[in-house]
Image 1 (cartoon, rainbow, N blue to C red):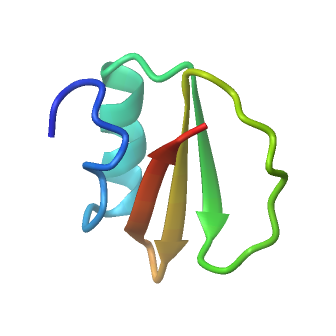
Image 2: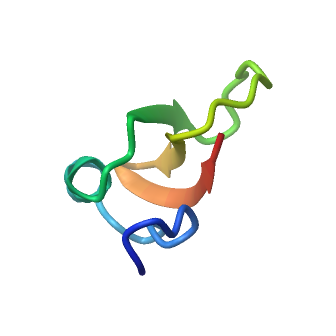
Length: 62
């Protein structure tokens, strides 16, 4: 995972993923339970984390 790699957080516990994201400069981190409804607005600098059982299953920018 690089500092700006939005897709490199899968497999991490949510606490660790949030800590790394903030350390790597993400302006905002949005945590969503897997399958949750969400707005489709795109925000540069926001990292989205889809989480199941406390573990990130998908991550992406926007």
